[in-house]
Image (cartoon, rainbow, N blue to C red; front, top):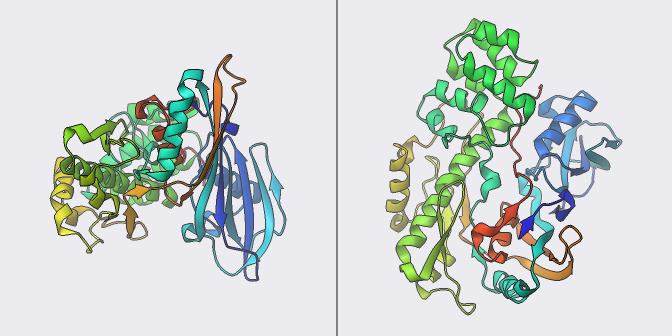
Length: 409
């Protein structure tokens, strides 16, 4: 089974009740193809010569997809704009910035390719099971695009006060998503780390070079240098760490509650994650408590804990030599972990599917499916549940909405 052979194979539309009214903010609909949200936002800022503080949006949408989402610009142009990869439609004025809280759900249309005729009945059964029984609500791998080849999370040394290591991981570590010029710029950073004058001469004009320019005059002030990383990127690093801990925590709880015969695992950037076996559209009885649970997003800001779950959480944090109290940032003050809770179980809404001829793979079939998910849930987790085995969900194109540090600010 193949996902995202073409960007058009993965369509997502943000659903919101926000409508134009009156006020100092301009509301827009952003349609894009083949670029991530951060890249589209940077292009809009560049094309209209806007400051980053003027723009506000709700969520990150995949690069390898056709997506629709909304954004506001404070006193922005009362017109639309179109580029090769995106189209911005002006909708009218509104009273406040558009944020993630304004997203009601996301609607997906996904085409899964390369199915054999003899697979169709099983796939249809799994589609029905995904809707009626549901799936584990893990954060999927798109959330972890900032994790490089070392597997280290940028926010871990940052929380522990090792600002130089955090900066190195953010600015220099090789990543599977890196493309030509970005790969070259990161190699320069690794080869000349600490020789800031040389790096300033070698690097392209970029956000990365701006941070290096600060280090030319303050060669060991890594604490302040980390704070110079773009705020949207810093938020992504924290979200990746918090989501990594949440996934591992839930996986431990599922593993400890189910017999080996009632559970299996899926591969992920967080390591192997445990999921329950579904037999005859039934979940194991021992899983029912976890199915209806909401787990807090872990951090030192969180105080509403279910004591029965804390042993598993503390064990996860102990693996990275951290405690719950240390899961916070002392600096800078404008970046912090999210608060709230996340449901452990997910039922796709209004799931529909139909078979088509696969025009990319001779004598094979394509499954086109439509469904809605709450904000923050991942359509690729639904795809995993539909594929024959979770690890068989093959993508032809990488998935990442990781901002590029080489972009100018």
